Image (tube, rainbow, N blue to C red; front, side, top):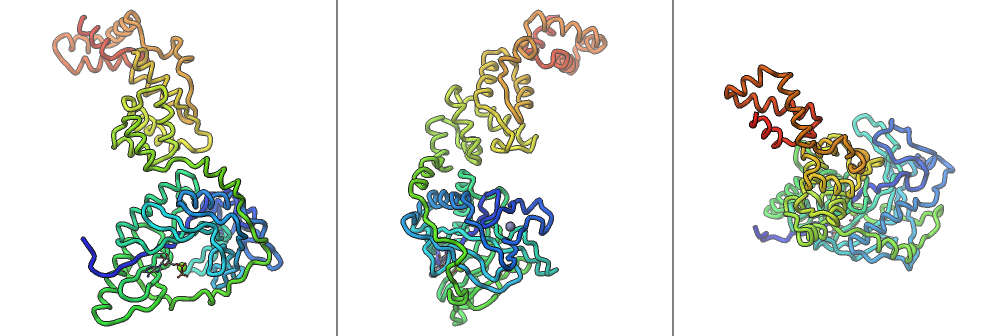
Length: 459
Ligand code: ADP
Ligand code: MG
Ligand code: ZN
């Protein structure tokens, strides 16, 4: 439906960068699997006298990659200065957060566009600690984790548009492994209708984002009817009540008392490095979708499954080099995913090494009729974590049986199940299925199903 009132929505998105170490110290980032306050050091807990180490190079590189995906111009020719952003809160042991963002610093990257929405800028900053408002307990494991902050222009017009854009953003960033798997994102949502804009803080799920936007628009319109003029405010979203709540008047840049961090040198992003990263960026999901459908003739439904994960698309493309991938697509979208899911693994997990060439070989044996489909599926069960060449294993152990050998198993099945065979001969159909099942088991699934049936019917 066309909206007939003024509406602007802009986002500030925070995502956890996927690094092994924190931003200014060497503490591990595995905060979820660690006991509270176990991955900490004097730096990330703000002990007096401690100084930050130089920023984590991996985090810097990931911000560059993200900025490139977002079509931003990267500020490589000027000094980037880390700022101290001061505020007093239990989650902030140093009394300030170290960030490249803020009114007084040049952003790492700016002026981009992604999926139709203008990107204002893109930064690097550190996460504060985790503070539990109910117990007052503080967990410093998260303190100092590297975050990317992405700020958009207020180009969104509906909650649905925000949600589908964010899904596409997270999906695209997964292609460059920029964000922590299952790390999620946090959004501050800015909304204005007739009055000044409000900022709803810390929405950490798409569902909350959508609900908060819908509620806030309705609230502002209702107030407007009553003649209430909206002032600049900072709000929180109370999920249980489904309402936004005023936290405070909007703080200004001055409230944060930004100063350049004297413990960190100004930094320059290396242009050569940026160009090198540019060359290694993968195609994005929409390009991959296009390619699968147009070049490889994969149907849309299967292509949608494949593009969920970059490694899976790459796998399909690689398979496509030697195999009619459209025809064989279920070997990936059904069989490969089945065994991966069963083992709770994905293609890019450490230790998982499944080669498209091995699957191509397996498929070709099935196509030539040398391995039964059933047997091939069974072989695939063993492809996780490491696939292998079936050719070597073919020698006798898994290849499809000759007619002569199949007959031997049929005879064995009959002699072990004389009564069932009699029943079959006297017309009981189900008995045949049982007998065929016996032959499949005896032959370790190497017998050809149709052939077995044919032999039984000829008896
Ligand atoms: P702040 O200090 O208020 O957080 P930022 O520049 O960091 O300022 O954030 C600005 C955010 O507010 C951006 O996401 C931007 O899109 C959004 N915004 C700016 N103007 C409006 C507006 N009129 N209505 C809604 N959102 C707006
Ligand atoms: Mg803000
Ligand atoms: Zn530390």
